[in-house]
Length: 71
Image 1 (cartoon, rainbow, N blue to C red):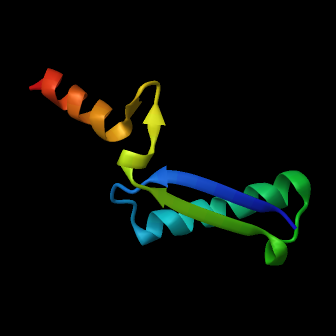
Image 2 (image 1 turned 120 degrees about the horizontal axis):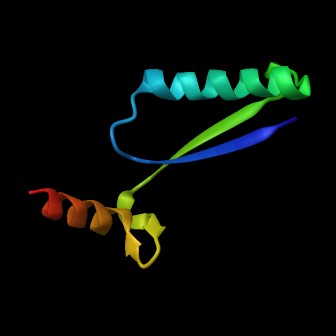
């Protein structure tokens, strides 16, 4: 009974894209590990960029800094 947890930032990922992630992840487990798709669980968690850090800063801060340097 595989359980896969995908974490992404909450920045406009569509329902169709999430469905593709679920189907693709399940298919990979079926092909590689011969797992039963009926007992394969895929959870997608969307995380606010304020709650996702890289190095010393949140993704929100890093994206703002990047935007400021590109302007």
